[in-house]
Every structure is written in structure tokens, then in C-alpha cells.
Image 1 (cartoon, rainbow, N blue to C red):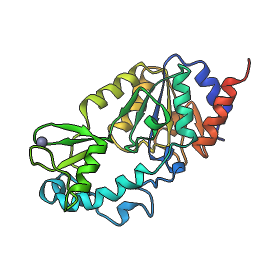
Image 2: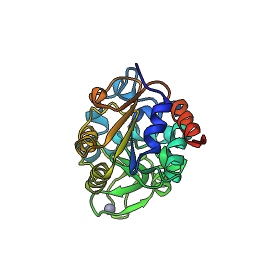
Image 3: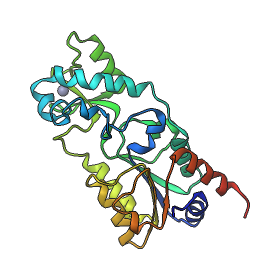
Image 4: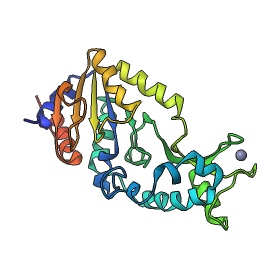
Length: 251
Ligand SMILES: [Zn+2]
């Protein structure tokens, strides 16, 4: 028997240091397909090939032919009520940080401020040779200007976006920061993550080991389902908006 917004609101109301851990499921209501799900983009492309460090280094044209339509799709998407509710929880001082696997930028667009993007994000371009970083709009402008669609750094090397590629290390500072927040958290609210991909899958255990409580809001069961103190199903936007309303209610 799943819990409801009532239980989640009660848990959050008593939290000293709540953090949100979000995955692809929080963005599906914005129209972004979960690319690992059936019918997702990885059924058409072999990710290890097109979105990999190897392809980027040996065939940047092929890498960018795949990457560019995804960027354009994501730039036209808006945050949904779940992203807005998470940002509002932070404004109210309940949520201290948002740790996300998503690269879509929708938490930032909704106003989340302490945002840890563990898989990078579409907020910059970067050069793997000289370390240069450029604003994201500039990256797109250079891709548009290039005949073969590959944006180039001033040093002549192909630029990549801030999204972590297969075969590339996750950003060490972001991962360290995520574990710091998890170690401080007395409540972790997991939204739309299946908690299957390491090291993200280890974060709930850090909270539980520290005596904290896990709340899980997903479409399907996760490996932590049995250890969660609060379990919700259904649309994240609806559940979180109701939770906010309950936190507003007197008493
Ligand atoms: Zn460079």
C-alpha cells in the first residue's frame, strides 16, 4: 500500500536537512523521453558508439550529428510542476540541495539554486585539450557556424558540451558534493530515479547509514523500496504539488 502526499508532507515538515535526488522520471512530464526506456533513443543508436568519448575523439562529426538534435530538443522544453515544487521546497528552506542525474537543465530553469549535476549539463561547452570553457549559447553558435556541425575551440580542438559522455569520468567535484549533502541529510526524497546507476545508487545508503529517512517517488519499484520510510507512486508533479499544499495548511 503506497503512501500519499500526507506522509511525505509530515516527513518534510520535520526535516532538518532534506535533499532531493532526481532522475529521468522527473522530466518525463516535461515531454522528455527517458532515453533508457522502451522506445527510447538508445534503441535506435548504440550509446557506447555515438555518445562515447571514443567517437568524440575519432569522429567528432558523427558525435555531433547525434548530439545536436538532442540539444535542440532539450532547449525547447520547460520545467513541469515537479521541478517547480522542488524549487519551492528549497525556497522555503526545507530542501537544502538538489542532486540530479539529469542533464536537461530543468531544475535550474525552475529556480533550484544548490544544484549538483552529477552527469554534467547543457550549461557550457568545454575543450578537452586546453581546458577552455565557454557559455552554452556560444557553443551552439559555433556549431551552427561550422560547415560540418562541429564547434571548435580557439585552440582548434573540437568542443564538447558539459554533458558527461560514455567513457568519460563523472565530474569529481560534483560527485564529492553529492556525497557530502547525503552525509548531512536526515531526509532524502528520491524523485524519478530507478537508483540503478552507480555512484548515484549509493547515495540513499549514505543517508540510511547516517540514520536518515528515505522517501521514494517513482513510477516503478527501486532497489531501496523496502528500506524507504515513505513510498509514493504516480505523477511526480501531482504528488509534489499536493505535498506543498499540505505544508501550507495550518497545523
Ligand atoms: Zn581548446
